Length: 285
Image 1 (tube, rainbow, N blue to C red):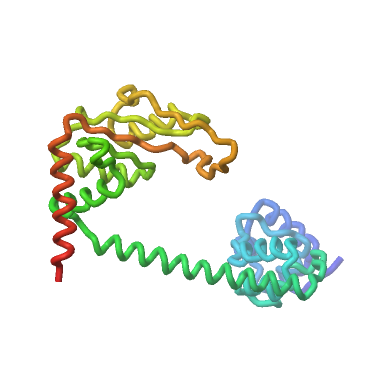
Image 2: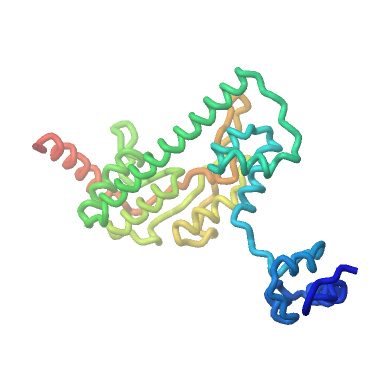
């Protein structure tokens, strides 16, 4: 039996008491206060081999880094590569992953390719950030449109994308087709500015025959704020086996055709406004 002088003479009895308190879930401080132990070295000896209760363990701020380092090591990264990825010291990395097998050494050409790929990915990320900031700044610069600005922008959009009257095919009416939801939203807002109600608009979807027509009609109906039942029969495009289609994702919803009834006078106004824009641009200083 280990004996100590004074109040700690019965070491084994004291250890039995301390271990029992530890297993009840008490912390070191609680045990020290309970049995009146002032000597930390003695307390360490009494608790030797007894794990602390879970509630006393503080979260380690480096636990996430450690897990990431181990994952990267398993992927075959070197200490230097892991250090670049995580920004921690190589001594810490060595401690965290030393039990893992060493990755196979890649040849110099492969390592050079990987390094070049990583530099290029970083460069692309920087470029994309700059690209998005340029777009955001341009968006903020536009601000709120006046009715006149909205009218002019709508005329230009229609003349670029809408159906136009030809000497060999008289079509003095507004008919517009597009696959971009933002373009359709803007066009419908422009028609509202011109006083065109939804009752005067006829809607129809133009889409490949292999697509989900009801889903496409529901999407465009929700966008236009009308019931799908008001849509005219969809125009289905036949599949050409010689053509490799790229618009085959779930986001493919074809095009929306918007036809405005009794719109001959309105069409003439749009055409006249377009030529006014052209003349105005010629005389701009």
